[in-house]
Image (tube, rainbow, N blue to C red; front, top):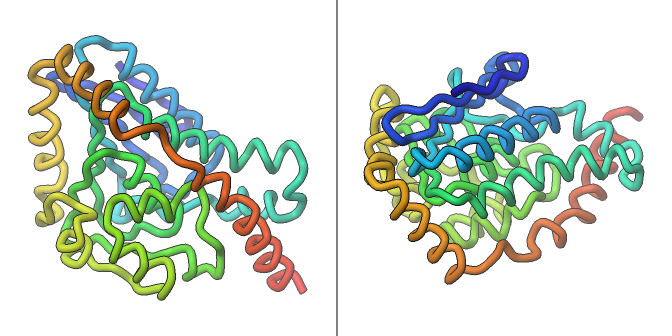
Length: 248
């Protein structure tokens, strides 16, 4: 099966593993509302296929994800209270939440730069594998407040790393991210895809069991917290500040 929206999101299955790929390398896979909707759609199709026991999320090109698309942020900053602005960012936020509630285990295969919300794309998955060229660059690099539940997800994955990235603006290397618990493994770039697929096959070998265990796991862990809503107002404030100063 496949999903194709202007070639920006693809979905294929391989031995019980659904491979979802961000495929907009010309803009470093920066998220648009349409791309976020297609990612949710790809996940839904994977969940609806009973033969799928795990999902791998990866990206085409040298970088995993450069965050939210600049035009999307500019439009949200222009009129944060408009329905269009709310829905645009909301589409991206809702996509993060959908992956965090996924019916099957999810693995992010991460290489190159992850910037701002691009880090969220990896954090929305249960497990992360990083290539040795991966670099985490926080929202502060763009003078923007974190959003989309970034702080909550990052703190859950690696508390010390969260403080360094969010509070201090430190860039995090692949080795540092792995040592801090953000990723389960750091591998050479040419082994990234296969390493993630091999991990996924552990669940894909028995999809029915994987889904029951995932349901229990999510019930015990609990639903995503209020982080995304708490971050929303200060993020919009920061976007208005950034784009106001850039246009003056």
